[in-house]
Length: 83
Image (tube, rainbow, N blue to C red):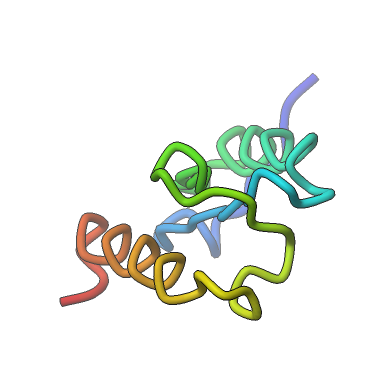
């Protein structure tokens, strides 16, 4: 079976940000796998691997949201998007 390609997203670096306490933490890796198969350059940013712990799905509303924003900023710079 051939995977569907997403040519409009193939040139857009993407990130899936997952908090360890998010209900999505059990299947965000599937989203990353789908995007990869579709030709999208995607990074799976798991917050616990960045030493950012106990985040749920609404990360920007939590008390450590500045840490989450900093991790996303680091990804943007690493990806050549941010400065």
